[in-house]
Length: 230
Image (cartoon, rainbow, N blue to C red; front, side, top):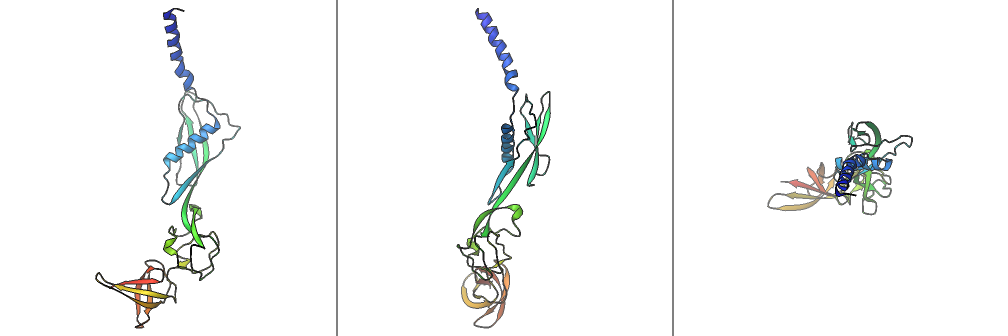
């Protein structure tokens, strides 16, 4: 074959190659992987949390046509929802589209009871810990620091696996013997007292000074401890 014919054959092959490679045959696994990667780029992981994305299987009865251009995805609804439908489109000369259901589960590390805690029991490392719980199953304020409530007491029975909230525990419980700290910028004194009501961190409660018998308002600063800024 002459050099000119060889050259023309190569040029002809190069001209045809883009047409051959651009007509991409898509399978179900590819589309599902594409959707999952798309959402992973769009959804940021929340603080102290995780995001789990589950893409529904494409109905085997659906015939997926080839696409000569890259497929696109968009979210036609609020991405903060647990269940969303992702729209997949092929915008070539013979266009097509499909909707793919996806479940987006956001879980958070929160303090839970790792065993049943009866009313009045002190919270310890043996009965509380951190677990990742789905956001739709968390009720009330999330507690994410085990150390912050160690030594507090259950104000009511807390079942195994239940989340711990400030409403069902007290750092200072009514009738507890507590330490009262009175301080200024220059000095600090400690005395003993009795809590006249229950509360949690930074809440103000009434306490009775054991020595003087005076009833004063003070702020809870730790387990069985209140502080008064003079």
